[in-house]
Amino acid sequence: MNTTFIKALTILTAGTTIAGCSSQQKNKHPNIIYIMSDDHAYQAISAYGYGLNETPNIDRLAKEGAIFTKACVTNSISAPSRAVLLTGKHSFVNGKIDNSVPFNWDQDNFPKILQANGYQTAMIGKIHLDGIPQGFDFSMVLPGQGQYYNPDFLINGEKLRIEGYCTEIITETALDWLKNKRDPDKPFCMLYHQKAPHRNWLPAPKYVNLYDDITFEPPANFFDDYSGRGRAAKEQEMQIDGHAQWGHDFKLIVDPNGDTTNFYRDILRMNDEQRANWMAAYESENQEFLKAKLTGKELALWKFNRYIKDYLRTIKSVDDGVGEVLDYLKEAGLDKNTIVIYTSDQGFYLGEHGWFDKRFMYDESFLTPLLVRYPKEIKPGTTIDKLVQNLDFAPTILDYAGVKIPDNMQGMSFRKLVSGKSSGWRDAVYYTYYEYPSVHMVKRHYGVATERYKLMHFYYDIDEWEMYDRETDPMEMKNIYDDPSYADVREMLHKKLEELRKFYGDSDELNDKFIKLYLDKQKMR
Image (tube, rainbow, N blue to C red; front, side, top):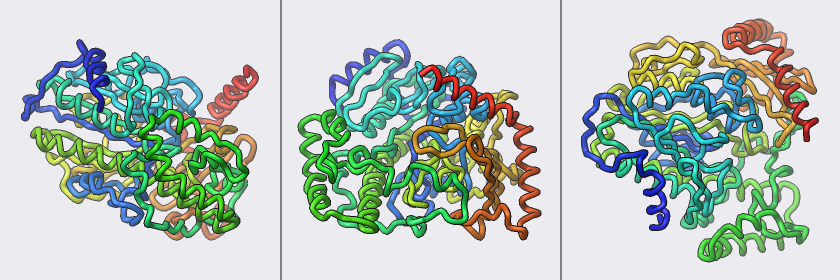
């Protein structure tokens, strides 16, 4: 990190934090480090066993704590997921139904509650919610989606551009706050959020050649033709071979037609050294690709490999940062009394169904990685197969902090579940998605999932139901809604769906309200 940034950060944080660090914390309340990456698929964490890449530092949390195999989200899109994290409430309750509507920071959130109960709080990295974050003694956040190279940050509301690679800057800032800016006599809660591996997957300078010697095989259903399913799966716009962009996603400065692409904006943002390093890594390969004039299956597989390599390269820096933070906690004697949570704002498609992105309630985007370490309560190597949701993060964190969970939070604390003190848990979860018509054209839907089955209703410009047996059809290729052998299951799921909608306060009337809100916004444009 450059010295100009360190000086600027010191000035901007003066008065909000107390310098100093001690090897032993005096208070008895646990510290909390909540690590969230953006679009990190569980398939790309080696602890989940898919064999795609190695994430040794994230895996440490599974070895030394717990891994959750059925953790999922309430709304698989970035900003709404983060609003759910903060508030412990569904999107239709906290108001952040999609990326476009504003988030109301004035409502209660768990960092505010921790602050009021003696915790020192920090938010470092990506939050993707407009406005100055509330509930934090220190905040350094990316405006909107942020940039991978030489990003701008809002440091306690003041804008500063920092030269370097985004993932590394966020990690360095988190470590600086832990070592030098927090009050060692107070328990702390730090939200340490990475932009990576969000689109458009620009790896760090030192990792631009990682995986050059590997050709990745796509998932078995990469060439899915969506037969046996309805319009929703067929009419999306998130296919790697078809909807991803030559410049933005595949990093071609000039496309096969000889036209300059929008990737120029990323190249121009780099400094001379960064740009030279990038060009040396990518441009010769790009030229070889253009000369080859690939078509059909060969072209699709080239696109998949360009995508997956860049995606995994960005994750390498995220894993490095997790390792640095875990190493510091151990060196400072804080590891035994610090809860470390690693998750993503949702899952992501790594070529399944031919897709990238998220949004659907199908498992690759519905499920999210979740690993938790807390030596005082969680046994090493614990596996949790229950239906935990991001709705549960806020109440769980408050529970660990010894703070009363507000009655209006809709999630449940999984503290006793993961410690082994209780096996009781919910038998179904509820899901909603609203951002349509919009980028990627994933239709509005809501649904219910049990450990084995899933029921979804797509609505607005269609009226279609889909149902899947997640045990016999884990890749969700066959819609069994009209299969008479599953009639009893369908009846059970419809009943469960209505029970959950009533329990959480959702309804068709709310859906109509949000549709009207969308249409009114369109008229104003």
